[in-house]
Length: 236
Image (cartoon, rainbow, N blue to C red; front, side, top):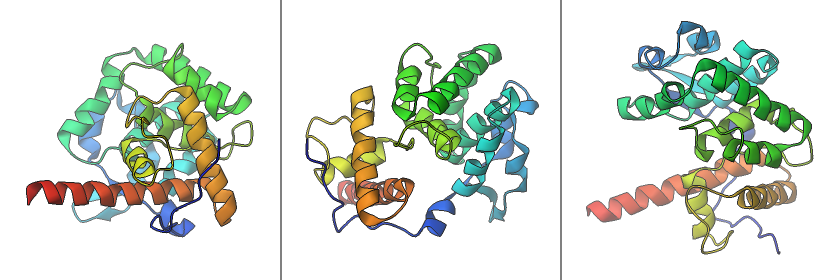
């Protein structure tokens, strides 16, 4: 199968802008969702405040991967990945909190540890498959567990393909520019589809001479523009 190049409309940002992609969060709202306060990563308390809320960026969460050798470190990275992907809306935070409501702490610890071991020893696709199947954590779907895989294993995973985030915004962009097939879903991607996504983005990154996560960020930015345009049209 031919791998498409990157369309001109999808502009790759500089790495400093990707690393600095920052999301606001409400600490108190998150603490109410966690099993206890020890799950909260202190790295987030050092994040700068912009207006009403502190903001956590990609660089901060990527730096937390070094702690994944311990149960506490894995817990902290999981929470930080969820925080980075969620924002401040109560409804969104409550939905992410179902991850902790639907499983015991021990259940999350065991499954997260097994997944990250698979990531380190077998690679991104094997870890993705584990997240979907035998190591599935209820209420932690692909859009968020790929964030966990990305932050935990971008610099420390087996194989040539680094784990990357795949969500509905990225998929919308890929479909719009026909980088994937017409029947490509906006959620619930199979393991084969995730592997195909990694192939596409890594090929495009190699061709452009940039990091694969910079290409992922470019697709996300393009998908965000598409969504805003669609919402503007529907409200007109």
